[in-house]
Image (tube, rainbow, N blue to C red):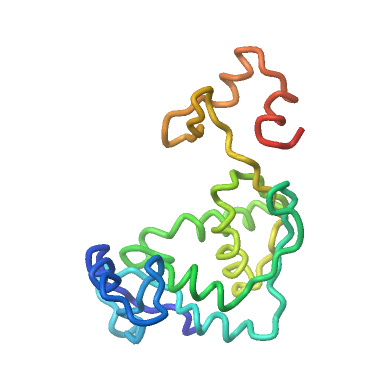
Length: 189
């Protein structure tokens, strides 16, 4: 497809490249150090990056959209190529060659494999949706409907997350929370 290229940049390399940015380069987006490397130059341990310019060129004139039902972002969202270049850039799709697939790609493909039609998740993942929709569209796969709910927080205002060993829904249920209580916590009720 010509949409991937190998990248050997470490996070330190990227920070160094971004510390002396060129005009118009975002501090949050990969600066493209390895962008012109051909796949034939790929070495063990290289990441694979999406060549976003080429991907967007392939989709030129195509209406890339997704539906959002969450209160904060409700409506039809259209991929803005210029914004994607500035905010997404050439993301890593696979670390160490093909061994470790990026979460946003793996989860989008898993949703397709399981025939998921509606994705419900926290609003902190809203910005990743544009990237997932772009990838699904490039792969000519179905795009689900999304619902991003406000984050669930504890009494101190700290967001509840699995990585922080937050309580599972089962624990809330054991403490007497009803399904309606839980729906309300995620902004569905």
